[in-house]
Amino acid sequence: MDIATLVVVGLVIITALTFDFTNGFHDTANAMATSIATGALKPKTAVIAAGTLNLVGAFLSTEVAKTISGGIINEQAVTIGPEFIFAGLVGAIIWNLLTWLVGLPSSSSHALVGGVIGAVLVSVGSDGLNFYGIGKIVLSLIASPIIAIVTGCLVMTVLFRIFGRFSPSAINGKFKKMQILSAAMMAFSHGSNDAQKSMGIITLALLSGGYIDVFEVPTYVKVLAATAMACGTAVGGWRIIKTIGGKIFKLEPISGFAADLNSSMVIFSATLLHLPVSTTHVVSGSIMGVGTAKRVNAVRWGVAQQMVTAWVLTIPCTAVMGAVAYQFVLWIFK
Image 1 (tube, rainbow, N blue to C red):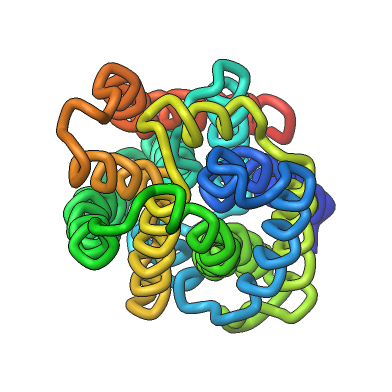
Image 2 (cartoon, rainbow, N blue to C red):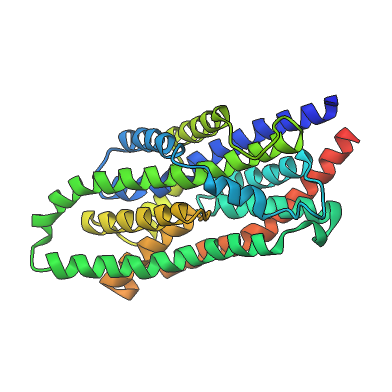
């Protein structure tokens, strides 16, 4: 085992855990922004709870990890090297930090996919990409927020039909308590899907470096990835919490409950289907759907448009960052 491979694999593991950490604080808003916005949970309590439940959810399965690891690179056309993975992670981390600084929710999943695509393209060209796998991943990432908008609107409409005859003051207190449960479900489902992406990347790096013989996520990788995401979640992404929690639609306890419940169902269903989804997209879509059920113009579509623009730009921008990072890796190690 040559020293260069050992160094790059080590860098991949450290960088993947850093990505998981940034994913955690970037996506804290997904799990707890609605409960903070409605006053159901105090901010520090919400963030600690989210970190704990993200940790637990990360141990649910490893099937999403396998989808991510085998879905981007064409293994028959190119030997998967840890340098591809490292470069892709660097591109994703830079994007996470940039969007976090401006308080703009974006997809860590899109960022990771885009970063790896850029690294492969600049190194071996389009033949190195698994277009079927990429299409499957991108389709799930695009379809999930659309589904969340539709189902969020349906869930909120049903709640309006059931509780519409009650005064807001009569039901807000009860839904604040119920929102604690729905927020917990959201945090658990987030961990079950998002933490697996880094697990898959680290395991792929170990496999490509010859440190394991088959693609099975080692227990220590599960522990490391889950802990990194939980720690990042505990730090909290306050800028994005403000955007998710209040700038899309003015949430009340009943609408916050509906958004969390709907998001957790969509994300958990994707996990059971072994599909990676963007929790940011799903939560934002749920809030838009819930707001639409109340009144179409209740949603601040200008903010929503800014978010969609960021979503569209994520893959091409992180692809460029991943390509540049790959050239940097070559410059250092070759």
